[in-house]
Image (cartoon, rainbow, N blue to C red):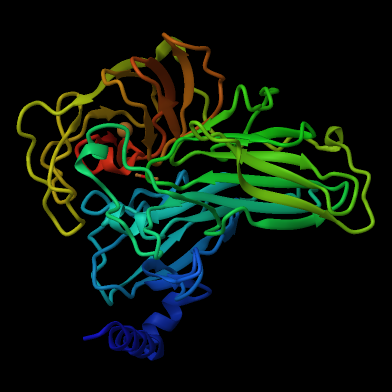
Length: 460
Ligand code: C2O
Ligand code: CU
């Protein structure tokens, strides 16, 4: 079956399903998402072999509202298996999209209904958790905006999905992972994009206040970011409002935004029409690279950053540190001969990494058991030790945590789901285990995740 027949075939299947009474009722107001092959011109010639939710565009921003049910009917229009994860959302375990841990992989042509109610407002994102490396590297990463129940009063909202692609001069994909990269800092792309575009320009009202949502959905790159304006303030981190003033990043002290992380920045647009506020990235040995630009248009508002009310905090339980039990986690190399990665969700063929000396045995295996069992409602401190010289953005599903302390730096008391663990760092984080289920716990450098640096934590 060629690609076109395959797509027509799946469309016909969906049509047949849609006319069946049960699925009409079940679909309700479900938003239909179809994972499918795509092509897109990053340069002059179109790049084929992308994976998206439409044939010729990046995965769209998905919107929801805090406390309101969402229904997403995901159809797999590819020939590979998949499963979709909603990164940062504290939802029921069965909707978390992790193959074998929370659901079976979704085969080509199959449909899976995701239904959940996001408890938290803020900036989140979505990506597959089966064929993770292949599908993410080929484009399947999108931003998810959960709106506050009450409008926080911005004049503009701009989501920016930062990610690299690894392309040759003709625009064709280069190998998206390498053994060398997987065993070290990961394999970087060479075309840096924002919403799949190179330095896109977005128009917003001159003198207005714009909520810039910067999302790192790359498989590897830790972006070093700053803005061309000082009329800006970081208002949320990894979805959650920050309750104190964070220093505004600069070229000398850029913001480290690791894969999986998000920063919401309130930007006061320049007063004059045509002026821009730019999002810049520092790359080794190069002048600052423009990732995206916000351009002032129109008559001119006279807004002031000080007018902004703080965003309402999300309902995240604060851990009781006096009663918290401590659990240790060591992130390091794989002891000789890690088990092969098996199952339907894509293997890279080797194990380089481990958590607590155990490399993840592959997406099919729950066999290694949970890394820790936490009791529902109790407070815990997780002590994370990086034994390797590489950086690891450590992500926990289904729960939000607060960084406490580190042997290397002062950690701001943010509420987050992903902590960038530095070389030789030992960091402590705290959480309340208030969401039951098996929650994936892994490095978000996908080449690390897929070569062993993954596991799960059970909340009972
Ligand atoms: Cu962003 Cu386990 O994922
Ligand atoms: Cu890592």
